[in-house]
Image 1 (tube, rainbow, N blue to C red):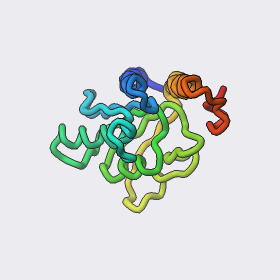
Image 2: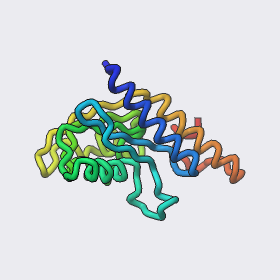
Image 3: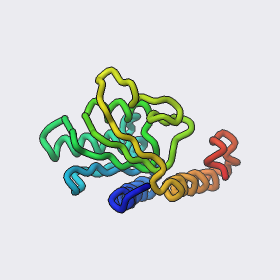
Image 4: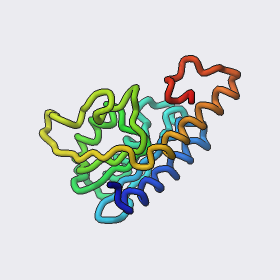
Amino acid sequence: MTDAEDLRWMDAALREAEKAYDLGEVPIGCVIVKDGRCIARGYNQVETLKDATAHAEIIAIGAASSALENWRLSGATLYVTLEPCPMCAGAILNSRISRIVYGSPDTRFGGCGTTIDVIKNNALHAEVQVTGGVKAEECLGIIKAFFMEMRQKKGDSGAKLPKELLS
């Protein structure tokens, strides 16, 4: 069962995703919470920054590390609208984040168990709790709307997109 705090913070991550959408970025948003308060926010900026690593989670992890003046984010929870990819899952492990809460599973690139599982049996022997599916429909909905708008702008049928984004 999802608790009220998870819903609250996923709403905050969705607001970050809207910022990415407005910039023409794939709308994925992230917030990091520690001791009941948001310590960092991030949204996809791959196109804006011309940086393949500028995923919402990576940006939020950097901001959280700056806010705490420590790269170790033990006790923090990362909320993100789409299941982290393997790169982001690795960064989550390296930063010692204690918990991941994601919205929609990523059937193409999910690194927290949907496609591959970077989190379980990791070389760091870190224990990270993973909760998926929080506000999944809303989180996937913004992504679907984004790709539909992009297809319409390009006059593209979307044939190359995964089926879950076409419906």
